[in-house]
Length: 508
Image (cartoon, rainbow, N blue to C red; front, side):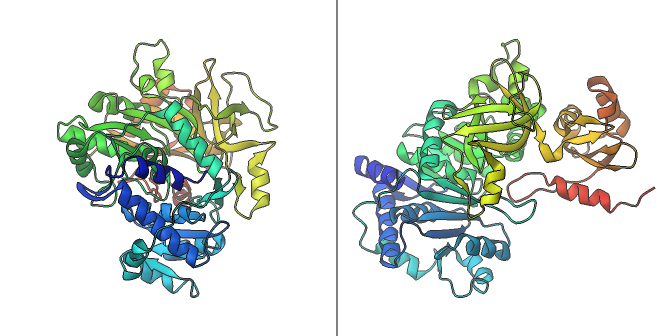
């Protein structure tokens, strides 16, 4: 199913419904949105770009992002969205690896990219050529696509080596969209979706269900995440739904507390993309109430592994509410989820192993990389690389990425467990726990701590917390107090950088 069909149906049914906004300014109705996409699609088709082709999108968040995506799909081609925060050389590598025929970008990015692409055409959405594309005679209907056709080629963040292209098909996207309604949240025509996180990634993937329901699409004037701006838009443009990384939630809640606000107008905040610590989500629900829903997914299974609905996030009556709050919920409707050992044997409930998932939202494979595909997908099961356990009710609790697990003296230590304890200190704002080589024990535990402004935190206090809550061998052997944790463009903590920092420290 071509998602451009969803846009066309909504535009046919409700042509005058407001569609695209820059901040509070309406730019286009659904009729205008559909016509722009159909015109872009017609121009691409005239250039020989269609089914089987890839078109890259290297742009900052802006309403035109959606015009471009749906124009690509109108033509039957696949989109290759690239985070605008990447270096032009990184973007050029992705464009070449994807074999993209054309690149949509904007003036702020074109100059650094053009000299790297060996003549491949770049169209700036700020320029006259793009304006002409949007005025071309529109296609009467989108190109028909099959369930197995490539739709979205997503490149992983590449924290280890070169990024891999995750091939998402029409069937993957359709399954993700439908299960959102069933397992994550319902959406309503009078609501809006706010794109504060990169539209090239999770935030952009959530456009589909909102196009189907004819919702408003808001891109903040800042083009990104600004907590004060979001709180204002909530009050003026709500009800609003949005996708946010846990670090964004933390910043939004901090701002709401500082301004004595409660998140008025923000109906749903879907959080994912990293660990949400118990202290942070408890604080978030205390300040902003029942606005939060958690999903667990990966680029290889977009938004579609498990979900923790708002009822579970806000519940404090169930005898195991705290365990459920610390979980990532239960399997979404389109997949099966298991916890397995290294041989793929399913483990008993409560035991820790690797999380594997099988179902309609799992990628078709890595782009032109059969070796990596065979390693990741075995007998139809995607090996996520995440360690976790499942309780008797089916709730999955993440421990850590398998590569982040610390083995000290032959015992497994999961950094997240230690991080949760350290974050319970009232003056600890952020923390990251890593393992570093040790000649006797194999690895030892090191904690990097960011304290609150003017907060007083001592190693002795953190030691006392750990000794009161977890086994002695899990306690950090050293603390490093820093101003901020290093993070990538998607808000994830770069533990590899912290490990590198430890390698550079002089040995004693």
